[in-house]
Length: 145
Ligand code: 5GP
Ligand code: ZN
Image (cartoon, rainbow, N blue to C red; front, side, top):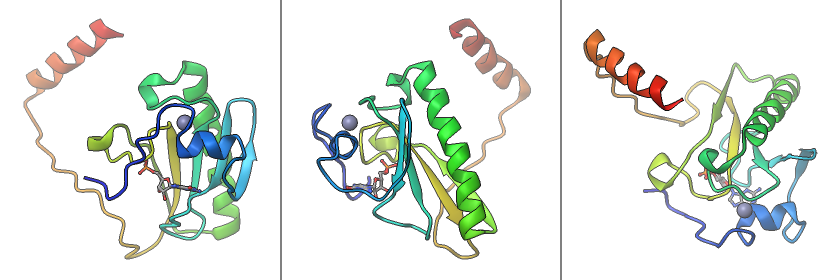
């Protein structure tokens, strides 16, 4: 469970207030659909958040245009982060729901420069089920698309 979770209602959440200029931020970029600003936590130097301007709680609440725009802005920001901070690695992270690791319920993507022993960890317990199980999952997903 994350240490801090912003439970503010839509329109009053931290990022909505930041978009409205009601709380200060170190802004990097903005366009019609997105805003990019320095993450207050700076897990590593150059850590940027890219968020939708409109309040969409998670990826599932964003429109296809907003989802595409966030990725497009993240790509632009990633190129700038690489040029300025020159990290040996770069991770994009996008969390949804408390169990997904999301602490601010306003759709956003992290652009995080990565370094040797930077303390960032995500455990990834592989299961490797049989091919028939994968085929079954894929069939269900194709039917839902
Ligand atoms: P999440 O855990 O939801 O993926 O990411 C939320 C991020 O928002 C955290 O990394 C946290 O540091 C950042 N954050 C929380 N409050 C503020 C704030 O007021 N200003 C800025 N710039 N970042 C914030
Ligand atoms: Zn919001």
